[in-house]
Length: 324
Ligand code: SF4
Ligand code: SF4
Image 1 (tube, rainbow, N blue to C red):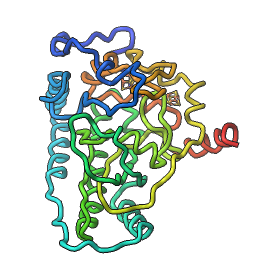
Image 2: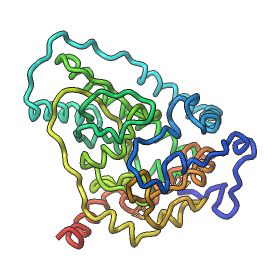
Image 3: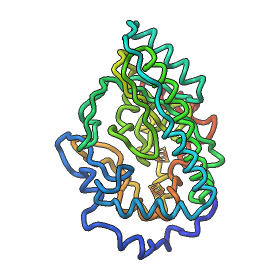
Image 4: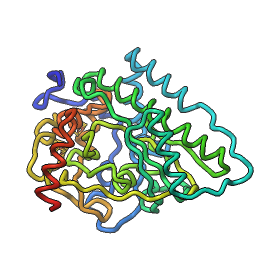
């Protein structure tokens, strides 16, 4: 990671950005301190018109548009997102869930995903204000190049993020198309927009890993160095299981991301958010910096689990120590 021009002690958000901030805290919208489980409220990465922070989100997009290479990548991503889906066959093919799951896994791995998982939809994952009637979620993970993301908070790190969002769509589309060709419903979904589902909780339940102190998932193979896309469907599948291997316990002792965050946004203690105790990143502290650095990502880059080749050994050690 290069030295940031916006170093920890000196970062002051641009007044132009802060003038666009609403009075309400993003943490309040997120449900920080709320003890009841409830669906998440859209806060970013939805249509700007429906967000309290919509003007701030637009400002973020506008900053990136000033960087020609980033803009070109974003345009390429939009072309991939806009590709039309295959038509749905009239008759549903009857299929064993195990066979369907195996076929989807095969397509995903062939089209560039490294992680695949299946879960049944839970109402608490659906963003407020969205209709969602797909009983199954297929989660896909696309691994990022660690060297490239380690250039965070430089714009070059954002190039890699956009590239991997593109790859996420490239992996999701053929799966959705194959399901449609079998007569079942399917819809591909991927970044940067969040869509109807908060994908982190289902990805955790699909066995992608554990939630880290930096607010991203830690996978036992790839650390936090991956992006998620998804396919929503009514095709019955075989549900995956949570994979707990000691990352949570590791975070209790580790302070690397907490110290590396230029704006002290990463809480060292778990907090209650919408009825669940979890690690939490302070939205109001993180996003001004995130918006001025094309998506920051320092916390993902510095996480020791993200160093290529390191996670499997760490997972083995932590599993021995904490999971018996
Ligand atoms: S992305 Fe946010 S939480 Fe992570 S290091 Fe950057 S400012 Fe801190
Ligand atoms: S840097 Fe350390 S504390 Fe932060 S998420 Fe990674 S392991 Fe957890």
